[in-house]
Image (cartoon, rainbow, N blue to C red; front, side, top):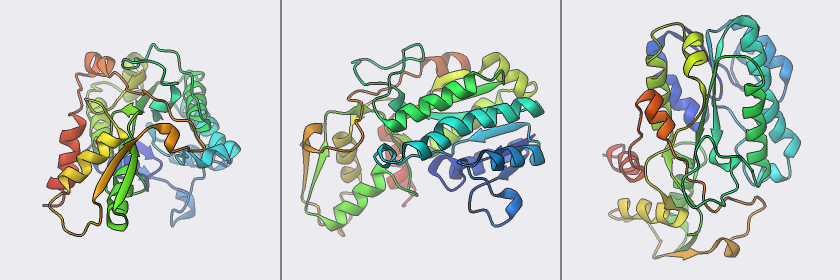
Length: 301
């Protein structure tokens, strides 16, 4: 199988490079690729069409996205070009060559007004530009008659890139006190678990990948098990890092969202239920605390 993979410098794309190797030829493309033939800019539709038509993959996997949630409020057109319009172009080109598409979305497509986990049947109602553009991307793919899988995930972190985990580790070396929001609930999800789950889904395709996704595709929620707040996430990070002596942090303080205003409104409750993923693919991701332990303890041992 020939796989075209975008976003390889991102958290999920980086991990996918490794997990996809067993399925065949993985061709990675990015805006800063050294060879012009592998340069793709999701804000420029012509580069998307050129790359796909030249490579002619069997499967296109698109973890690339505009992920600066607050900055998106002041750059809505760019965020929409990358998150909303580009996925539709990818889907159109995939249909043109008979390929399938795997795409990643977010818990931020929901408004956060529920108090139980969101299912794939719940109506999206994004409250910020980032969420609106990611929903537009989902809808753009779904509007094209192409075999596809859309995996919504949440609170993605790893030991690379920009994410909450790395921000907390940095701030702990710089500050004696950190104040973290305690009234937004979700599931921190390690990028490696997302990549490995994706590979496990692909491995179940006993037939052509397009036929497989035509039969079992659609939208699925893919997050770690369990739930916590940003404060709970931070507390767990520092408890696992507690034996290290290069920290200045002495106090971690829980605060309400109104004490930490941001340009983009975050959903108060964005837990995603993954029962559909379990029912259709037999996959259940580990508890978020177990994954965090693997990242901070096992990876550093």
